[in-house]
Amino acid sequence: MRKVWIEAALNGSWGRALQPGIPDTVETIIAEGVACTRAGATIVHVHAYDGGPQIYDWQVYARIIEGIRNQVDVPVYPSYPAFITTGSDSSPLADAAARFADIKELAARGLLDFAVIDPGSVNLSLTKITAATQPGGTYMNPESQIRYVLDFAARHSLHTDFAIYEPGFLRAGAALARAAGVKSPIYRLMFCNLVAVGLPPKPYALAAYHALLEEEAPGAPWMIAGVSADLRPLFAETIARGGHIRVGLEDAPLGTTATNLELVEEAVRLVREHSAEPATPAEMRQVLAAAG
Image (cartoon, rainbow, N blue to C red; front, side, top):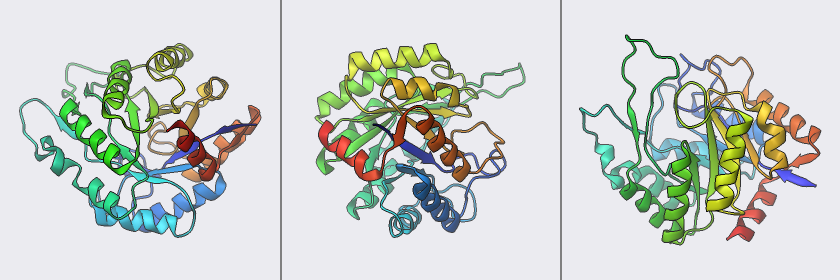
């Protein structure tokens, strides 16, 4: 039977003002990660909170990852600091060593399941803009930093998780991954509603991304994910094409009232309705090992 990975993205960077149901303490993130895994999630993705705004601190991430892993055997991977500029400012995150310092600390302690980098940069314009709307920033991932993370992944024998916000991300990411000689990346195809980035969550968009993926990285593992988007209408076609799915309050439309556990339970039901079965973490690791 076809095995489908279900990734649970628990919170993201929204904060409770925009997504009220997200877990935003170490204890609640751990509890929801464990509950979602026991309900059928194959992978858990977290942003770090410790009772306040989102933070990037490897020690907080370590508490979260170890807290989940101590109860369930599941890959857990963190975010990394978003380098966003309006074009008139500077940032310490322009330095790759500073930006990915926490990721390196987690890897040194055996707590990193995937190396994470988004292989491109993009303007974060909103889909609904008026003359009074403040300009969106630019999400920066310079090629030098992408190469930095891919080199890190190669040295640590890690798979890379790519978020594909634009078709060009896929083409560049595949080319850079080949040049770096890394293990097969996981391609996370992003469908966006809130921001005018990439392609919307429509069947034609899924078909286009999948065709491009088959040209650039045939046979590579991939999944669908979103930015404030309901991807359930794409689940059947994704499963039929051999892809995997991501759910959770990071990706769901802002203001979603369902919990992360409810979203995972619904995903499990929908996967089974489409003649497939949720993959266990062990089954996912076997696929990645075979992919090289």
